[in-house]
Length: 402
Ligand code: NAP
Ligand code: MG
Image 1 (cartoon, rainbow, N blue to C red):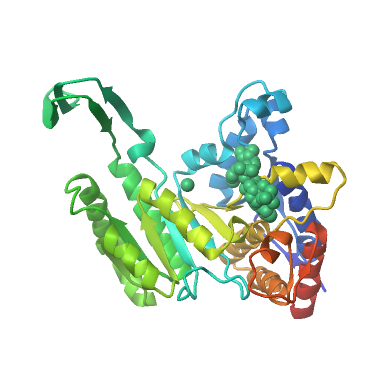
Image 2 (cartoon, rainbow, N blue to C red):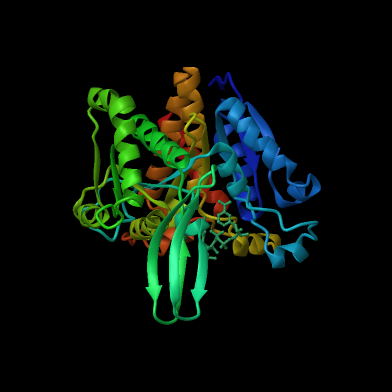
């Protein structure tokens, strides 16, 4: 079989620990035998980030902007313990944070649904994608512990020096105070990413906030979404038969629980943080979750939602057998290759990605899976595979169906 040819390179961002091991296995067994892989390689492993004073992360983010599609391996976000472990010059920032800031994106996460791993919510038949706004609100707040009686006010000083004031509270005793903000620019980016992603994946888009209570703040989100939808996306939504609707978050929660799935749920930062954990655990496992960062200018960065699986890596280093789930990392690759195929008009690459994903699902549905899934499956006739055996089983299945 001739290998599939690519036109534009993918931005490949390698990472750390067990996921770095899996990364290479996926390339060796599942990609390079079938695709003449073209990538621009960036090593975001901690050693290289330290060596380059993290310039490599900035370069990788710029390459994503240049080429439009990237795929990223999980990476270590250094903490005090990693400082000593890797003898680091500095406690480098999270690469995901750096890339997100550079691309100004929204993160979309969706569970990979497979027979035998059933969601806790029985009526969920299709994945629910959560789109989380990743800027501002309580994550960029200012807080004061109020010691005793006094007046708290919001003050905005305009560039010309004029002031606008609003009473927050007349404290009679001790308490707490918090100031939060967001910007029209960031909310606008968030909205564009959501509408684009809905069109891309042909799914309805739901958006929810608490605008009945927050009549200015949350209402601004609602208005910006509505305005952008009406002027820029409504026609396209109607053309392809998908729907945008806004509803109060309380109502959204009730509807989500009763739904069959198969839509995108956009949430403000805090709501998205909490709801994405709820959705992912109800669907099964972080290792069965796709994650893609979509920028308003149309850059796509695919990754796994989980971390570097450190405990498994240390076992691997000690020469012990591991059974690490590679599904999310495989889907990061197939997601990126499919997108590259779509943009460059390479049908064979799109078909390859679809077939490879089917091979993964069918391998699990045939009862062959890694240990983490064996623990939560509803089936009893299963074979537990180690890390490499699972990837090889997927390859065998792919060769049968391709
Ligand atoms: P983690 O790597 O996601 O692992 C947490 C635990 O979840 C693992 O110990 C394992 O449980 C289970 N698990 C996660 N992924 C798995 C998989 N693919 N297959 C099987 N089991 C899996 O999170 P962490 O231990 O909190 O973080 C480790 C490192 O990853 C940290 O340095 C952190 O900075 C980094 N991190 C990176 C990203 C990213 O780059 N996107 C995201 C999160 C964390 P058992 O050990 O019980 O088997
Ligand atoms: Mg969380």
